[in-house]
Image 1 (cartoon, rainbow, N blue to C red):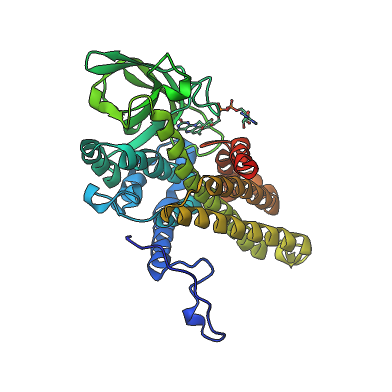
Image 2 (tube, rainbow, N blue to C red; image 1 turned 180 degrees about the vertical axis):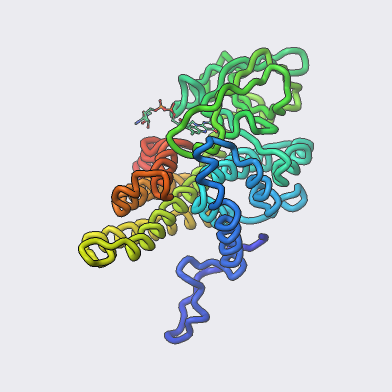
Length: 401
Ligand SMILES: Cc1cc2nc3c(=O)[nH]c(=O)nc-3n(C[C@H](O)[C@H](O)[C@H](O)COP(=O)(O)OP(=O)(O)OC[C@H]3O[C@@H](n4cnc5c(N)ncnc54)[C@H](O)[C@@H]3O)c2cc1C
């Protein structure tokens, strides 16, 4: 689990295949880790994913097993109960869990990227000890509360207020679309704390335990995909929190929100990559089994070319996602690369899921086969943690700089 980022890919002498570090330059530990997570996902998640999706049921039992395996605190150092792994390791894990089921992987991504990481980067020592240990160990999961009914892409245009009250703060407002809503043990909440400055310069981030009076989860949203994950509104009604609930600096929370999303986008890129790979795998398998006109449909050039396009895009997405993760691990700026990875991988997930449904014909359109769910799950990767339009905005700003 503590696999390090491999050094530069070496050029292998012809005929010395064993020296070749593989197409992605992963270390042996990373290859083993990826395979281990894949086997876990195939054994534990694949058998329950379809039913949980049908029942719209949060995967409590399997998420707990993910916690035992260390998948909920991959980025958290061992001293706080985590695996002390790299972003690249995290991405490898996300890819494999997403291959099995995106509802499970969204829980993993929010917990690792959107909650543990900001606590680690911006939290006080006491906050790290108090929250990271249970979050990394799977005792509970976290949630990230930025979006509101009238502010999503334009995230700083929020309305939730944080009013000073003696030593502490009182929160009032409504957050929307909160993943892990109603399931989380702690909520990372962004609220306007200073009415006298432009909104983006007057937002503070707070860590609010779920049992705080005045915090209430709404009903679960009825979603197109990732139906086993919980998405709710979170209401703050005179919710009083102490001064030490503030994470980072008062009025500088929006920087935390944006920095957190940069890292999160690599995780969603990996989620999309896992969905795309599964769509390709299902298509390849089915095309060899299904016959039409006296041939396996894999014999038809039209379908061969479609699978070639899918495979090529999956490889491009993987290289972009791994590259962004490596840049983050190396301490380089990676905002543009994270957006490129998420943009391309999410559009690849949609492309591959769409192609897979078509390849399955009528069977692609019914719930018996995995591709129908992949088609529904893929769409969210183009929407959350910044829509594809927002990713293009970020990328074009860098390009035009
Ligand atoms: C299942 C699910 C889970 C989610 N989980 C979370 C969570 O855990 N925490 C959280 O805080 N949020 C979460 N979200 C919210 C998500 O991040 C937002 O839905 C997303 O950022 C888009 O915001 P919006 O829905 O308000 O759309 P809007 O911002 O209203 O956008 C509407 C459309 O306009 C486009 N658009 C907006 N601005 C521009 C522009 N400048 N240029 C071009 N096009 C533009 C958008 O791309 C989109 O197509 C979740 C959403 C869903 C559906």
